[in-house]
Length: 290
Image (cartoon, rainbow, N blue to C red):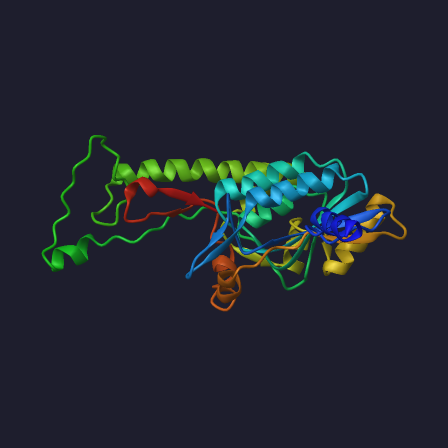
């Protein structure tokens, strides 16, 4: 009985990552799908948590057995804070860290990749999409056609800025563009610093376009062309590991996560762009996403 209890207690400690091997290791941390601050799933969409990814990076950095980290990226972007918290966590890493882009490494996901030591991408991956998108639908004309009135009751002049129920004024559009431009400039600065390139060089590429992996390499957005295994080998070489093990930080998938894999749209619209403004029917829900 004592042996059974001891075995059960041991399982509690080691079941989380399933790794009790000793020796030098390379941590592989997946970053997949839309990146938001806390993540979550529903019937229509799912997202991965930037906070959880940052926590995994921190854990790998503090684990003395782990000598290098590989971020396995397949994402078209996410929210500003969801991406920023991961990028900030990378800056604290004291070990070699490599980004491995498979299908998509665009917008917020590229921001994350740009903060690593080396970016490895498949030659036909979609990379970049450094830009800001703030489009939204307006229903004012439709409501007018059906004699529906939007009664505007605000205590603040800009409380309902961006509401779809009326046309946006030129003043409001200018104010939103000013803020989106601020996010854009921050994004460009971060990428330029991470890639050791000038702001002018990155700004010239920050037109919202995604580049194929081999094009991105020629433009300086990617260091090497290759797959996950190549990225792991490169990380081992950078860390001086000769015969190391791999520690996989697995993602926990819900039923909705698996379901939405079959309905995803071109890697979050192939990099929707940092600063995509999503406006719900509740105008207090004004959000900016990458």
